[in-house]
Amino acid sequence: MRICRVAVDGEPFFAVLEGVDEWGEVAPDAMVALLRGHPFGDFAPDGRVLPFSDLRLLAPVIPSKVIAVGRNYAEHAAELGNQLPAEPMIFLKPSTSVIGPGDAIQLPWQSEQVDHEAELAVVISRLCRDVAEEDADSVILGYTCANDVTARDLQKRDGQWGRAKGFDSFCPLGPWISTDVDLDEAAISCTVNGAIRQQAVLGDMVHGVAAIIAHISAAMTLLPGDVILTGTPAGVGVISAGDVVEVTIEGIGTLTNPVLERADARMGS
Image 1 (cartoon, rainbow, N blue to C red):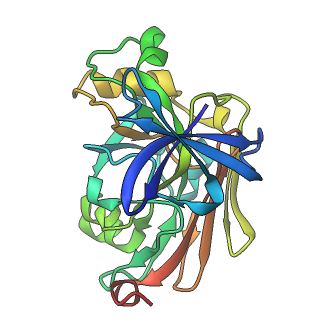
Image 2 (cartoon, rainbow, N blue to C red; image 1 turned 135 degrees about the vertical axis):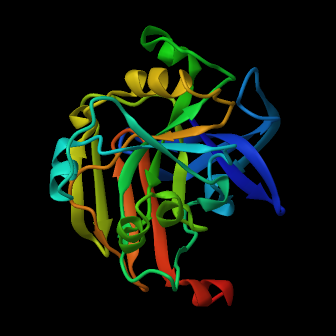
């Protein structure tokens, strides 16, 4: 199942998307069935079925918090000169950093080096705490693509990651939530203007999804709709105004975002 969030006459609705192949390609005649309420519990269609091509996709969820994992691919840790952590290294991104498909990543004036970081995002289905690894599947609604955008120069200068990863627009999510993804074999990639920058399989993660959920939930309560970013493969690099960044995960689809200077985005350019 693919669960999306769409704007209908300016109002957001969750919906189920039909007409997407296993690679995440949308058929020209794809349709969405709008849902009554939200998908974090029992849900049902509200009776309206609309053409996907007529609707605007929104971020698939607006979480109370985004919990991210650093240095979770060995080659990425090595390319930045870092040691692999013995357990998941977590940090937070604010909910205000979340944007959806097609929304602009806004480059802040404070930074001269903003990088892309393609990641698998896990969407939590229900309130939970102290989740055992073997029970992790029971608290997962599904998966989506993410870009953990990072002001790399500020990350190095500040000595911590809050500002560097917390700017508005620094957490693109989408295009929708897929409830079935091969966490061992699915490919993840990032392109900038069509050129491959990052490429790996999800099975390359040092700490798997179940271990990450157990580790995080031992420290903090997770709420329905919370998002966990699971780390990025090697190949992170700079993005500039005018670029188009695409994060693709097999079994989900492609998250596409243009890049603008923050002032240009504010003026609607």
